[in-house]
Image (spheres, rainbow, N blue to C red):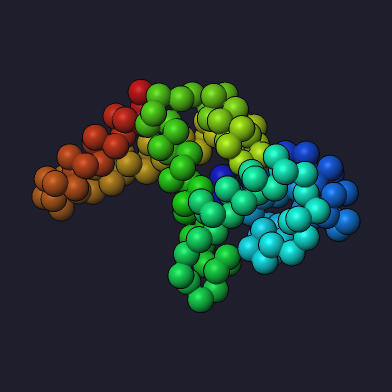
Length: 151
């Protein structure tokens, strides 16, 4: 299960009530993305919520793919965002706090920790494969990324 399946809309009941429609709790579920991407009814949201929703849509749903928002770009952008927060020195609890403040979405810190651990393990595998293939540049890049995520 991808980390984006474990990202939830904060206050999703309140937002559903303001929009007069049910939205899934998952931030990257199809119906949630439809509402964000199409923007229908966003004027019904209070200003603070609308600003965060629009920030989320601008930062993660903006791509030129024909199948946007179902192209995978939003999920990849969000994972990149999480990795950048970690590279900035934040731990799982702080990452949850920042994403809640930035976009009104949350996750459990254990899920974030698991995602970060999986990312480090993937980089270790890339580093070892690059070594076997003799790709010194890729090996060095994977090692540097691994160290920046490991803290």
